Length: 236
Image (cartoon, rainbow, N blue to C red; front, side, top):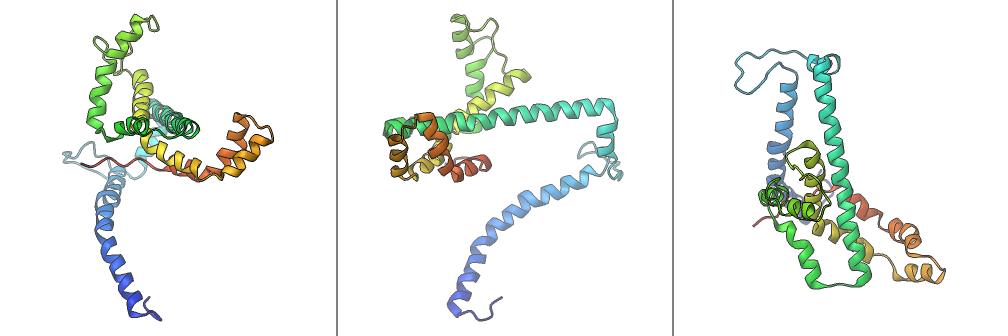
């Protein structure tokens, strides 16, 4: 490994491993090890961590998941709800992040506007839960009462119901993380050479055509990052 390397290059490699070791240790201990433990549990009949009688059953759990009607219905229903939630949440990334980035890019930068959008990102998940209850409580939720007063809703939204959770939580999560995705999409927009946009305008392209033909093809790296990256939790 260290053949044909100068002493400086060797020190650089050693120090790289020194700085990498703490993060690698945390990743292995908090991610890889729990996964291995979970895989082991999947191959047994253990119901909980206090179960004293545990037997190895191999892949029988997976077989029963597709052969037992009651288990299959529960599993399929859970998968469908998860896919719906993920789809709505993914849509919110573009609705909030990309929409606000395009708005700021076209109208120019506004320091206070950017601060207002980015501020919710500093909220904790617990605070987001309290806000959800305050806004959509069936009896006293602010938005529920407002929408009922305006006649938009006949019955209040129940955030504890599966339908309410499916829609409301991704919207609130999209609102909370709008500033994170806004920054990524805005950096992609700012990397577009202005000459290409001006050329499209001279050629008579309308705004929708400029989005599809000029903006989006040059923002592919931003799309990939926003599709794969999860915003890190803010730290105090």
